[in-house]
Figure (tube, each protein chain N blue to C red):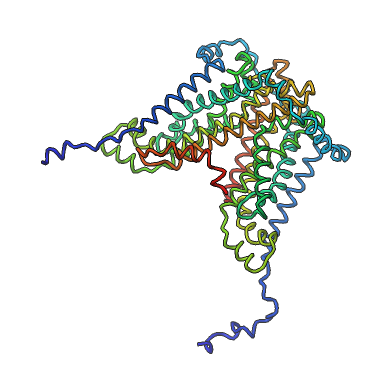
Length: 304
Length: 265
């Protein structure tokens, strides 16, 4: 058998037996070097626009650290007297109302934007609408809205609601498009109308994921609504701005810590609920709530 | 017999009574929150008759397209986003490896980095910007700092989750061959997750472009500074023009980035 093989393939006759390692291909390396160069050039160009002298680069970390040191110890007593808890809660309310507005408006739109539900002359404009909405940050929406809606939390909730339609609609319509076609055909075969096809064929399949997107968006919106207060749309942002402008750093520290605590708490609860929604559970199983609470309480134990 | 079979319909599964409780709580909470924020149906009607809408039109295009008014701050916005993306994503590479169960050097590193990251992420990006503006002065420099911190946090979260899902085989092979920690991670894990890293970096860049538009509202440079100034003059027509321009630019960048990401993953 070995005698029939061409001589080159025998180990001893290779031209350079010492170099056991194959050469690296040149093409990918050149691409990589080119990309690095591109990023480096963009970075340097970007830096020229930041009015960042060597002097500033050197002192900035110290200045930032100084601010953090001034915030310690945080002054909780003053802040609680000033009603910071109520303001954080107001941020949470704004986020919730905004998310509910976005959820109710985006769900029907998402169905109209899906290629298995609606014709292209309806679908494409709605898709573009989602893209347009997503491209405008909620703060900008709020800036415009504050011109025509009275200043306050309601304007903030509207801005968050309007902006979230874009993302929620896009995610929901992607979910609807990937839904299994079988149930839809079954409803069709039974003589179901367009509405029953959507209601019984698609909706039960997609609702768990869409609900979890809503919750996820709520988590994002809590942060967004905290920010909205900075331009006068209610919530904890206004308190932070006020205290920073007066240079009351211990108070700023307290506001930050309370905000962080609330955000982390909401994230933890919401992600536990999302996990349960996605994982599901058979109908009538009594232990679902118990498991939810176990997830909530025992996450730390479970991870180790 | 056959009659009975024909009329027999599958029994509707009983709904968990808890579902009604949850639904009631959600409805009550929504109603309560709506009351707290001052929800009014009349807003949806009143808003259209507000005389301020007239201030949005016509858009003064020659003002908007003037170089020093809008184009230069817009370029500044890009510069902030690029610098922040490079710094944030660059620092995130080692940090993400420390924060993944698969590649963390040891337990304490894992826990400290996890807690630190969740605190950083819990602070909204504009809070960072405002604090840094207070600390190191108004301008794009503070904005780039704030966005670097935020993109670092986002990137570490996304990328460490990818590393969690990477194949442990090559890493084990490298360790079995006697490699130390860093080379093992570099040859065993990095090549498999590098495409996702680049894709996430592009995604973070998109986020940064959007975020850097609003940074100016708190004095951290970029196009938001112009928006804020025009808002205080009630020049909503100019704001609308800026928005249209920004929208076009963001849209184009996003399409390019989405196309690149699709190719990578």
